[in-house]
Amino acid sequence: MQSNNLKLKIIGIGYLLIFTFSTQSYADVLMAKADSLFDQRYAVFDKKNILADKTNISQSIAQYKQILDTSADEKEKHEAAWKILRAYFLKGLFTTTDKDQKLKIFSEAVSIGEKLIIEFPESVDVNCWFGIVLGYMGEIDSKIHAARNGIPGRVKKIAEKVITLDKNYLNAGGYRMYGRLHYVVPFVPVAMNWPSKEKAVDYLEKACKIAPDDFFNELYLAEALLERKQKDRAVQILESIVNAKEIHHDIAVDLFLKKKAKLVLDKVSPSK
Image 1: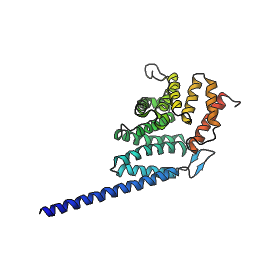
Image 2: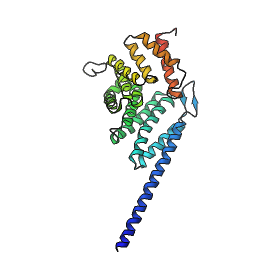
Image 3: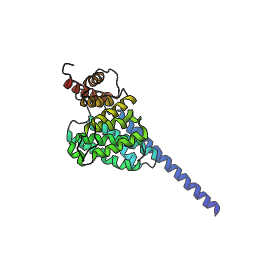
Image 4: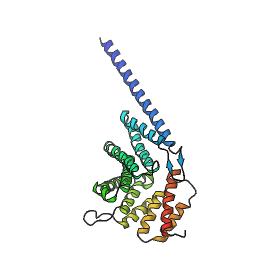
């Protein structure tokens, strides 16, 4: 009898190991496929309009979703969590020029991110990428509507947490997020009395000190400096972005930020 029980236990353990290995192998296959599709996000890319075909990045998002829905491995799910938010961010930026479509993409990202932030509350990766997609949704939406939805306050808390968790993460993503927030959110007595253009410069200076070659940090700092009437330094930063030869992020992000920097530069220094 004892011998039979022992055999059953051994068989049960064997099935468990096979199931665990099979599930892990399946998740690994999905992750590899998702990452490969993400890496091919600009396989069809219009440089002039900075517009990418959505097929590959949409399929990568579907693969990351499948991992989140099926994997029992926390490490695997965590990796898929921040990667899906990153993929949504780039999909929203570069697969459409239509404002409503962009808002739809970022809204989907925020809906997923709200669940992920509960599952991984202390993850700097998930917090930072969730804050980024939430912040971009706020910038695309009207400022009044975004404020009514409490987006500025939510992004503020996330940025503060990212800074606490790891101030260097994603090229000073927390400081960049916080500085940009102070720049874009209007000061409203009583209702919204914390935004400060001076603090925008302070936090973006910190971001640039940590990651001086990050175009997001530089562009946002230049815009904040212009708000503070520091035109000469802002122009110098903008020119450095426009004239940069090396790829700092990826082809789409670099073109996107260079175009934005050129538009700002042309506005403040038309002869440049």
